Amino acid sequence: MKDLGIKRTERSRIVIIGGGFAGLHLTADLQKSGYQIVLLDRENHHTFQHLLYQIATSALEIDSIAYPLRKLLERHDDFHFRMVNVQTIEAEKNRVATSSGYLHYDYLVIATGAVTNFFGMDSVARHALPMKTIAEALEIRNRVLKNLEKALLTTNDEERRKLATIIIAGGGPAGVETAGAFAEFKRYVMPRDYPDLDPELCKVYLIELLPRVLAQMSEKVSEDTEKYLEDMGVRVITETQIKSYDGEVVKTDKGEFPARILLWTGGVSGAFIDGLDKDLVDKKGRIATDEYGRVKGHENIFALGDVAQMTTMKYPKGHQQLAAVAVQQGRWLARYFLELEKGKQSEPFAYKDRGMMANIGRKKGVIELPGGRTFKGFLPWLIWLVVHLFSLAGFKNKMITFFTWSWFYISRDMATRVIIEKRDK
Image (tube, rainbow, N blue to C red; front, top):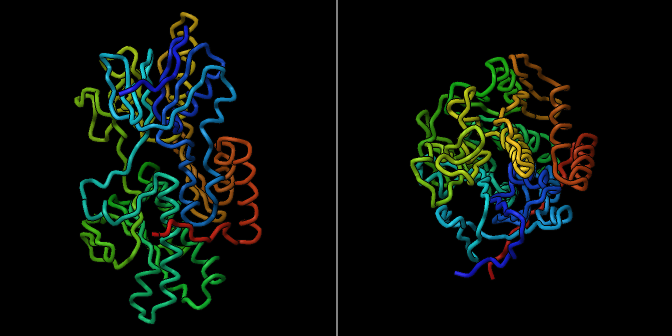
């Protein structure tokens, strides 16, 4: 296998695998460093995953949440990007094997994020629709719109109901926000676009295994969220385990739900790369690291974000798989490398918990701050919009999203309702 062909310089080389939240912020904060930086990713863009559900529900278009990773080239004179699939880490040789060749490193950072976890349910993995990438979000949008078109072409009410029903598995922030967005789609879009289709045929279900939605937050927030969703027409079903799905019927331990669409937001696991000791990996697919992010047993290999189980005194079992953790770890590791360049020792990573929030729907948001204070309603909804708007990468993305949201607020009209898919020749 050939080398990737990136010329070595006198600078130490940092190879970063993954352009997600951790990888993007690490790379951006190293732009003025004296390192050679090589970023590897299977895609050529960063995806702002918090807003994928708005792609799926036709509220945003993809240019709102995708940021080209090569734009980072403009800020550093020795930065390189390669769109490859990293297959194996060869720690003893200080190199990685990719789909297009080898690449040696002085320091390696694994920031591969997470993949959808179907918990061993093969039928669900085959037929359910995950939502971790832009392509998957577009597939959901296409499927929903096509099903509604098909519903207009059949006279069978049972088939129409099955085509128009949407079931979301998982009551975390992604599931709750997706359910709320589809409820708004049913309320605002369907009467305009599908006047010949009874909106009441469209049922939105949210199925959660645990006793309440948003289980990471307080019971008060869960209660407020569930009431918001039910008022919007979402049927929330808790303490229910999904057993199987054949593309027609979702079977659970509490009954069956006919539906042509099952959206899976029910769990993730770290995107582990072969080569490291598998004893370092926990049940969530996370690689064990110390409080400096170093993979245990390796001085020059680091892991960040969803793929890392960084154990500290405060978090002996590692941090939650949250974007906020990944962002802070990425920025912290950049400071670590900058201090290392100066011959200094950095302080270990310390996560700053700024609370959690969720956007349920129009003027309906919930926030829980550290210490347990909770808020609901218009202000949390507005704060959610502002925080996510300014968290987007790139000025253009911020402006597109701002004007799209503003238009929806004024007109109550979703941005894009077009079916775009590859046709067989």
